[in-house]
Image 1 (cartoon, rainbow, N blue to C red):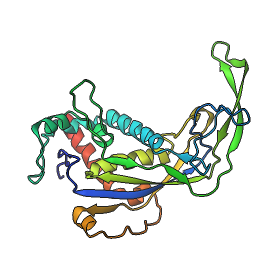
Image 2 (image 1 turned 30 degrees about the vertical axis):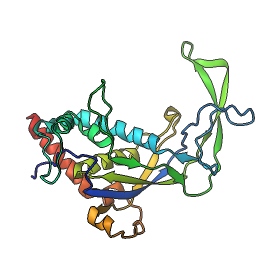
Image 3 (image 1 turned 30 degrees about the horizontal axis):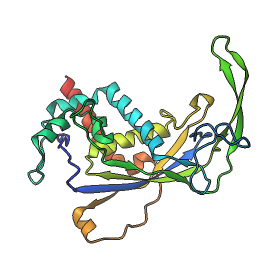
Image 4 (image 1 turned 135 degrees about the horizontal axis):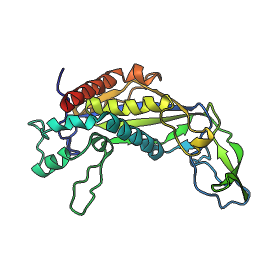
Length: 270
């Protein structure tokens, strides 16, 4: 079993950029709210829309639920135990300050993936190397309007006069977006792939009103494309993305790298 690559990864270096597309298809309705509407003729709770008036899935919303999934997954299996053997080493060609190496060693796996903000002035902050674009609707969408009623928490009955309606993106609606990852280790893409798989399996739910049955998604991805600095220098045009497939089909190698990390974390705990 090869050691997990835990090298400190500085933003200044460009080793590899990994790109792939993702597609989210609603298994049920979806509500990602734009806040309470001030339009008297509109819905009380509209969905977020793009400039063309079509609903969209903000990259921040998807990123938030994926981070939550990664953090809970790492905590449940204590995957951060593998970091006991992290010395903050770097490639000889990549000079990293001692302060950066020390800060890096203090980051958990999820923070190395999604970034971390300093908890006190002068502390160590680390920006994410992972970018997730907004996902735009593949076709024109006619949103549904559903009625709702507020519930009195004490009596568990309908609260008087608290009636509202909300917009819901219908089941079957598909959204496409993109992922860009700078200098990722195999297990880092594996953690992202694991969270995408959890979303596909209904272990994570997207958006609001999930207690009403909303937010169940199907997730598909394309095969990742890897670019190094030399390839970028040649300005090779971006090839058309491969067809969409399951997370396991297209990110299987990265899921295997995550499995190796889990085994080494178990060995570290033992």
